[in-house]
Image 1 (cartoon, helix red, strand yellow):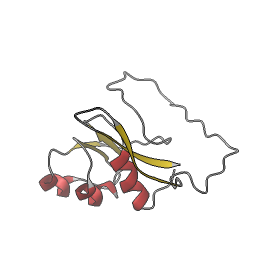
Image 2 (tube, helix red, strand yellow; image 1 turned 90 degrees about the vertical axis):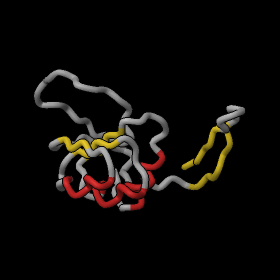
Image 3 (cartoon, one colour; image 1 turned 90 degrees about the horizontal axis):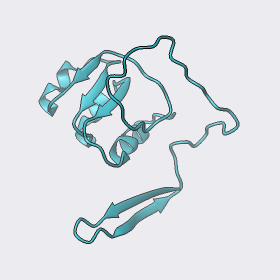
Length: 119
C-alpha cells in the first residue's frame, strides 16, 4: 500500500492524504532475493538512507541549481540539495541520485516511478 502522509508543522499531528495500491514493486518476482557484494573495499565517504535496492556507480556531479543542468552527463551520479519535478530531465540520465536534504523520499520515488523505472 502506498500511503501519502503529512505532518502538521504546528500541532505535530499526522494526516493521511491518500492511499493507493503500491506500484514500485509491481511485477517483481517475490520469491527471489538479489545480493550485491562490493568487489573492493574502500573508505566510506558518506552514509545515508537508500530509497531503492540496487547498486549504482558513476562519476559524481554536484549541481547547485537548475541552471547547471546542462553540465550533467548520462550515467553520472546526480548530487543535488533536494528533488522536485524540475529535475526530471537530469534524473532520467542519472545512474543514481543523492540528495543533501533528509526527510521522506516521496518526490524521488514519484519521479522515478513516473519515468518508468522499476527496481
